[in-house]
Structures are given as structure tokens and as C-alpha cells.
Amino acid sequence: GAALILPDEPLDAVCYSCTSASVVIGDAEIEAAIQVAKPGVPVITPPMAGVRGLRALGASKISILTPYTVETSRPMAAYFAAHGFEIASFTCLGFEDDREMARIAPAALVELAREATDTSADALFVSCTALRSALAVTGMEKTIGRPVVTSNQATAWNCLRLCGDDTPRPEFGRLMTQPFAA
Image 1 (cartoon, rainbow, N blue to C red):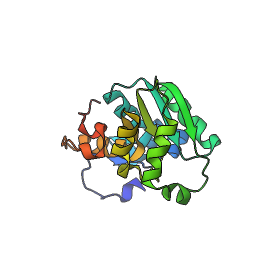
Image 2: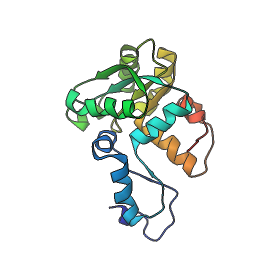
Image 3: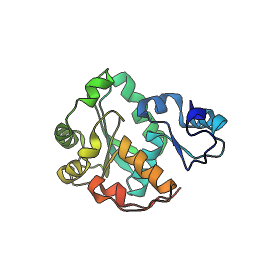
């Protein structure tokens, strides 16, 4: 599939945009598969971007919120733990269908963030590219009083920075004001 993306055009980055699948398949495997068609192009996955974003914000102890089932969510917690984060709390909503996840209202995400964030956490990671979390990031941050990193926001931040766009976008959360350090 990567070969079909702008054939013969130079790319600054390619994103594989599924958080839970990225965790299950593995960042290295996804990168290797994409680089068969797009050699040398940086590959981003949402969890990889989440790790980079959380590090850019100085977080080491995090809460995680996922819309997935427990079975799908457990590897997410293991992924972040394997990347050096202490997991302060872990909340999964139990949805099995992406369409249900996409129907969660942004306002509901603000309340879910409050419920899911442990008081000792440095930041909250909200998983899933199906969630409409971009519309709720600033509300979540205001409600919990700490940074929020979401799958889509972190991916956008990572891709924009790789494309040379360092424009701060505070309306999409604290992460979108941070520089990128590979």
C-alpha cells in the first residue's frame, strides 16, 4: 500500500495510523514494511509519536485512557512501560467497534480524562485514532491540570515537525507548542 502513496514523489514522512495495530504489529515491523516501498522515509506510528510527545513534555509517569477492550488495551500499557514510562493508572472503556469509538463526543472525553487521570501522573495519554480527541485536548488539559497527548495529536505533531513546520498550535494542546527532538 505504501507504494501507492504519491509514487515517485519525495516524502518527508509516512504515517501508519492505527494505535492498537501498531502496538500489536510493532513499530519496527511497520517501518520495515513501509520502507520496502519508501526507503529512507521516516515512518511514524501513533504510539511511537505518543512516546516522543510524552518525552517532549517531560512526562515519566502517565495515565492511559483507551476506548478498547481490556484484551486490546493490555498491550498498550505494556508498550509504554517498555518505553520507560511508569503507568500510574490505566482505563479502558471496553468498546469493540471503531464506529462506537468515533461516536464518543469530545465533551465526554473531557469527563473521561478527569476520571482516568491519576493525581500522581505527569500526563495523560489518550489512545485511538478513531477518537475525536483533537476537539477535546485543551478541555482535557484544563480539567486535569496537566498535559494530554492523544494518538492523532501526537502523530500530527510528529509529522509536522518532520516536515519542518515548527508553528506552535496551542489550540490543540501543550504538545503542539513543543519542538521535536528525534
